[in-house]
Image (cartoon, rainbow, N blue to C red; front, side, top):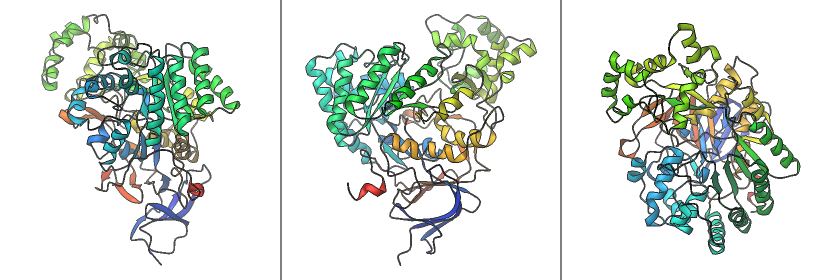
Length: 578
């Protein structure tokens, strides 16, 4: 009898189906789970999982590693948080298809929308592709620690077909629309998992311009949806302000009906429109009730800005005195800012006009917090900087200023931007429990100078299933199913997300009692030495991809079994018939 390549023994198995956990051994051969239960045979390699929980690997459907996977084999930070498959190409931004004349346009677009340093993209991208198929080939040439899948981005598609006219949001001609339909079908047939677009005014290029896809005509969107129908596969990913709610949601429904393909859109609670998410959820439920495969991507904690002197955002970046020193090395800025005269002058200054988001921070001290160790992403109102300033009779600017100088200027302050209007995660709980939502919005690989939400899959286990004190908790089986089987099925990857015979052997072995997030911090390891936020966790004893252990106790083993996932995958029971 052939020995299994790997046997995981005696763990408490949460198999991804949402049922009760059970103690079980798991045998793996050739990257596939072959047996679950009592495994008699000894494995070539064995893992003692007694007292540990065993889960499928997380499937993260909303990331932006589009550049990173072309130059880097480790898909971190996602891979160090138990994700074994990530989906890129979200929000309509990416790097293919592309003509040589438009490289800079796509870099400026990604830099602005997703806060990925342009210098890193300039140095890291090889641009050894033009078509979307060429781009996937380039990804495939480099082995990775985990699996990656990608989507056709609307911004790149529009610029490829229309050139500068597309970048400047001019209307597409009938011929150009037809070409977008053709290229969409071509990309899906080549292995793109879907198509993505953005229609929000928040997304801008690094030059401050609206993205190419803002205001794209209904006819253009319909043709692209028909391209998915022509290919007979793929998903749609949608970002929108939904300000013209009736028209926009009707368009979403129409595209799903025409294409016959699933669609997901991003849903958060924004302070300026605090009840919009409720209307969106109501319309979502109605659409699902009519049989339309539409889901909302939601997140289980605040979409949080990490503010600090090393990052992209903090409340003082538009103050004249800070602007004068902004380009100096960190240690020089810290030395200057520790001077009492400079401190008093800067705090007394008004911010420059023309930066509405940054300037709005000045009135949002009730949503700023010391994140702490371990990080607290659901802090009570009494822990806010506003509350501290009131207790101490101080100007909140003084507190922010002093906090940012801690740890020699490396300290970070947590600003709960979205999902925290009422100061708790109760609204997130409502979103999470809705059967028509899926876990998403980690933005792994993006917003590297401001947001570090890539750790959300870990947080869902620690906070929601074990540590929450400010309200109801969630069942561990539910959370595991939600970020494995449910997310995998939502994007058509039915060969993973479950630990059962025939499924891909993507597995986490976790010491649940010890599972804990570490605080985020800045590292400078992107091409050109550019920065990015990083966050680690304790408690992941082993992360396994295609039967190979890629991480032990958070440390890379050197194994690189991850591959590019081309197109939708059938569940094991139907593989033979495909």
